[in-house]
Length: 150
Image (tube, rainbow, N blue to C red; front, top):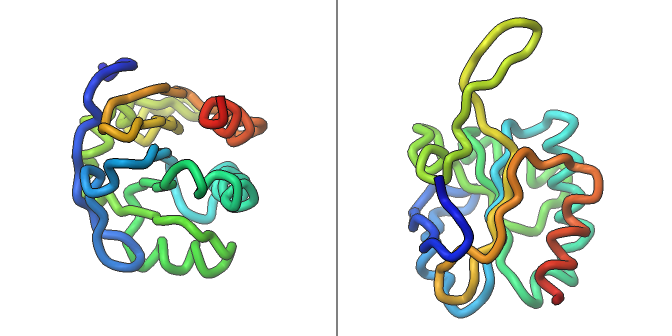
């Protein structure tokens, strides 16, 4: 399980516009947020909250949303909600596993594996500054902003 101070696992993932490599973003903080699925209510709200805070956020940090959705799905999701940040596709779930967000979930008495909503704040040198697990969408982006601005 990753903890504060650990080196963030590097990744290169396909995105809606090409590829992104975490280590290429050194020199600026990075917000990596994992979410279950494009176009679902909670995920859409979280993405729109990051969108609405983006003009303040992008001055201090890159923002990357990661789910198992395809780059095409991300492209449509971004266009529909005018999302200004990168959405990366972890189709095989390998990065989700490295970050410890691929977990056993339960709904309606049925168990299944899925992405736990989580956010990682990574410093300019690639180390984890803060981790939010089991994120509740309401107020989350404000909490991330407050952490970055302090």
